[in-house]
Image 1 (cartoon, rainbow, N blue to C red):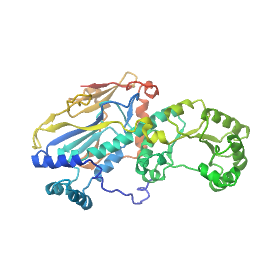
Image 2 (image 1 turned 45 degrees about the vertical axis):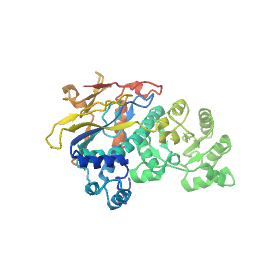
Image 3 (image 1 turned 180 degrees about the horizontal axis):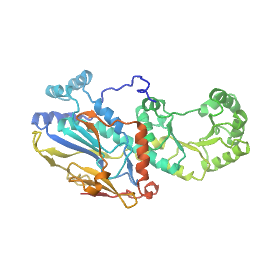
Image 4 (image 1 turned 45 degrees about the horizontal axis):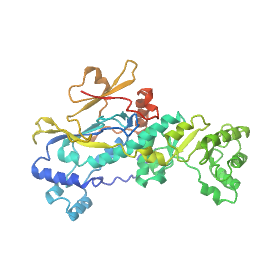
Length: 442
């Protein structure tokens, strides 16, 4: 249950200034040139995946829909633009009436993607579409990077529980978005209460080393926690001596102790020793949670350890070395004139250095092999081949300015599990390699 479900107010300020100034200067020039109303098609895609990654994960779609809905130039925003002289009065008058009235199609949240995948397609007048570029890229680049890292960690965890614990390692607002993206990518809970409040993500948390250090003895700290939170709580056992702490924890809570957390040392060795000790003490159902700067490689290295859950912070909220997906927002087609019936003309950037783009309004489909496993990402601008008609990826998100595809966050999470499961098995290998699917253009 989230804030909206409880009937509580959720702050939804204008997103209009989450943009670069040149979006507004382009608007002003296009209005003056008479080209602002030309029907246009923009697409979001990435030219390449981060080095070594086999697939990308699209996250943040729900947040994009909220941002588009709240992209409004209210009096305070207009006053700021006027005071700074950023645009002229005719442009300010146009902005005061701004409401996105176009259409948006895209991959549904949680879907995987590959180089060239048109993960979002924004259609409308040039003026109304160009203003959305920065906020859309800001959301998708951040959230998709976190979701991709989360997905790799989820695959490495092999079904063991994953807890997002990165709030103190990033900006306070980014932390909430990161929790959401991590949940889409396969994490089960977060320590961030703002994420739980806003998005309904399950929250967890018990105590830190400071709580143990506060008390005169470790036993006093454990007793206070158990008396307050119950025997099912998780006790942190590496403040002093782990072996002594585990013994004390079971003496205080009994064999019904919920879990112990290990936050330092050789996690593989310590986890084996703690498991053996817990079993000897009769606490066979007590779980072991490990934390301490984990990433997907560290998690994979603990596959043989008797670990029940992982808590991940820094590496998750920074995209495990890749904090952005390098997505871009490019004009791929525009009308020959402002006439609503004017045909669309494909346009594309032709610059050197690997930054060229492919023109034309695109569709995308994922072609399966004879066993139902994906074998190629197919992107085209012409008619969709009949054999791919049932495998198309883009869905309608906004129609005539109205959001038509809101869904529970749980749906995106489930979709990702299914999408990853439909890829070749090599997709979840952590060794460096090329994208697991080629992108074919038609």
